[in-house]
Length: 139
Image (cartoon, rainbow, N blue to C red; front, top):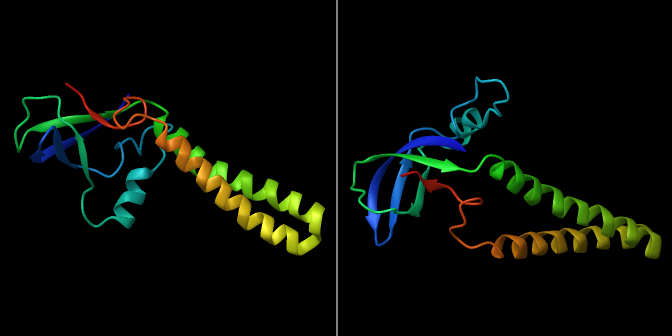
């Protein structure tokens, strides 16, 4: 599990709104760190907030540990970027074989849209609070 610290800033029904201390896991300087915290600082002026399932007993101001399964972020990024790109290339090659350069251009556009659609369907297939795909508050 990859963990990060945050603070509960609001409670809304069965959910807690958590403001994270850092953008990323904070392991940028460790071996194998991805540098996500550095990118987070560059693109986000404010700390990220997440709406997470409240395991119960939390109050505004409580410090919490937010966890996500190891590899979940990498798998999601790979799926989000690789699937549409692979569909784009496959459709572009097929379009070129069928209709030349115009077919390649049209195929690339259709392939990109098909890849995006497949990604969205795959993403929607997971339950919203599945612990292997969503960050959650450790109890």
